[in-house]
Image (tube, rainbow, N blue to C red; front, side, top):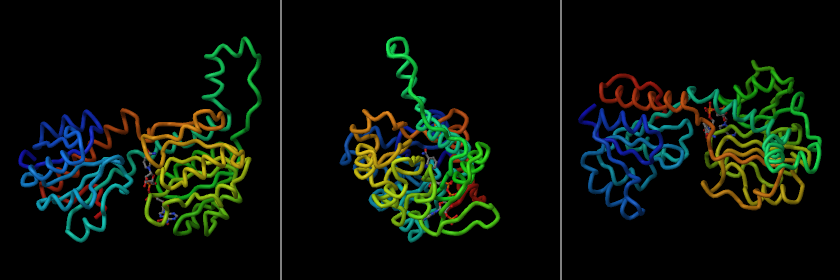
Length: 317
Ligand code: NAP
C-alpha cells in the first residue's frame, strides 16, 4: 500500500495511525488548525490522496470529496456513516466501507449499563459515597428496578438485536420499531416510534442517523415515554431534539436519560449536569482497547483489499 495516499481526518486511534503511517503515505488533517488551513492542506495534497479514513466526528463531507479528484475509497472507522456524503460517493463511484459487527457487543453492553446506571442511580450513589454523605446523611434513597421492565428498541439491527438479547436475560419484555418487521424474533412490533414509546418503560435509540431519523425523538415521543420512562441514546445525538429532552428532564416530564451521544458534541447541555436522573457519557460506545483494535484492523483490511483489487471486507457503496 506504499503508494496509497490516505487522508486521516481525526486522531481517532494511535494503532491505526501508526499502521497507516508505516504502510501508506499518510496525511493528518487535524494538524491544520482552522477550517481554511484544512481546506488548503487538502487542496495542496489532493494529487496524492486516494483514500479518506474518517470517523463519527469527522468523515468525508461534500466539500472534502469535491477537493479530491483522485479519491477512490472512504474507509470509515465507525459503523454509522452520517458524516459521509454517501449520495456523492455513489454518484462519483467512490467506494465506502465501515466497521460493522466488531463493535456491536460493546455498544450493546454500554446501552444496558446506561439503563441500569440511570435507573439504579449508580453514578449518583458513587458520588454520594465519595462526598462523605453516607456517613453524614445516612443510607442512599431507593431507586427503580431495571429487571422486568419493558424495553423498546428503536432500530432492531445489529446493535439493537444485541441489546434485546441482553435485556431478555434481565427478564425484560422486548418491543421495537424498525423500517421492517422481524417476525422471527418474537418481539412485539410497533409501526411507529410514538406507539413504541407509549408502550415501553425504557426506550433505546439504536438506529442510524439519516434525514428520516433526525429528531425522531421529539417532544411528543418524550411525553409518550412519560415521567416514569427512561430514554437511552447510544445512536447519534441528533436523533433527539435535545432542547426538548432537557426541558422534559428539568420539568420532570421524563423519568430519566442515559446518554452516550449529543446533538453538538463535545458540547453537553449544562442544565443536565445538576440532574441526578441522568447519566452522561462522552460518546464511548465502542471505546474499548479490544474493539478499537478490531475496528482499526477492519479499516486496514478494507484499504488493503482495495489496493489489491480484492473484494472489500465490509463494503457499503
Ligand atoms: P444496523 O445493523 O444497520 O441497524 C440499524 C437498524 O435501524 C435497522 O434495524 C434498521 O431497520 C433501523 N432503521 C434504519 N432506518 C430507520 C428508520 N428510518 N426508522 C426506524 N428504523 C430504522 O446498524 P447497527 O450496526 O446496529 O448500528 C446502528 C447505529 O448505532 C449506527 O448507525 C450508529 O449511528 C450507532 N452507533 C453508535 C455508537 C456509539 O459509540 N454510541 C457506536 C456504534 C454505532 P431495518 O432493519 O428495517 O433496515
